[in-house]
Image 1: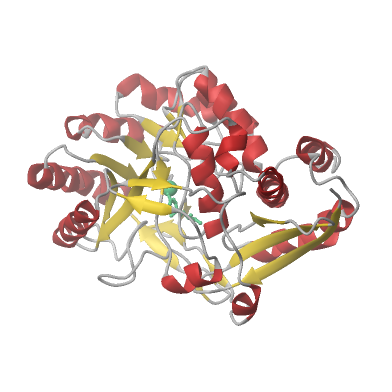
Image 2 (image 1 turned 90 degrees about the vertical axis):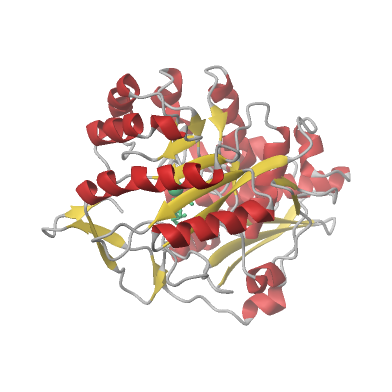
Length: 404
Ligand code: GCO
Ligand code: MG
């Protein structure tokens, strides 16, 4: 089966998504997600200008060889732009292979290891009361795992806040210039344990409770945080500190038994090697879209399994529904599955990407359609052209640029 076409689309049904469509001579098409929030056009160009022309004429079944060709063959390895492009190609080729086999992708990977994929939602409030209200809403929807974020008194906004009560969380702002936000570690460390106390007090320990620290703390601050929230038994604390220096997680580990999840910005197995080998984390958060597709993620997950590290893939609404659909197949199969993030999508987004997945009582299932089980409505997508939007940046109160 030969590849005869590869097209890239950038569409903005509420937010920007980069979609790759691979076409074969047998009429089977495959879809891949190449969305890199705030850098969408760089990946679109990398695909359009460099990789797509080199796909034409290749055997669509040769997934591993194509992955190696674009990874090693570029000479320039790794990096989010390169890896998002490779990921989209890989996803689309697995979609094609599974369609050709007449099977849902999870069957090709080795079959289902569980009946459903536990997902966690994102719940938020500008105040503690609003966060409690939002938690109750998600609890009623059936979620078994809930991530809670809350406004901090004295800070105008912070990671995880929606732009108004009842609105879906969307970190990026439209326009050509990122919004700047002020961050105070002191205020955060003081207030956040009160949020967990209030949640556990009101709802008990029925749901898994998660929290995203979004790389804001230093290792010793993260250690103090983890230790101070141990009574609330978090499922995980996410991205407690930036992870370029993997060894710095040792310091956190020495002080707390609060489980740690990291890796949503990683794009290769090398980014997580030491963290996994030294068992410095409990959950690895790499995604299909940024860490090399099914081929890259499978390698990371198998390696992580040796050290009892489980998966907890990134799944915000700024990865396209194609990524979500593919992730559910991966999660249904992967033996060392932990949890899958599911922030959800607007109706407008789901109209552009008609999908097969189901949600029931906190668990998701990718469906039984051959392939990944997702479509792309090109005509509708064309009505929503690219609209520049950027993630915010954070500064300390004295103006120093910080980690957002
Ligand atoms: C998460 C993430 C996101 C990121 C976003 C950046 O855990 O869902 O931290 O909210 O900030 O995906 O593009
Ligand atoms: Mg996160």
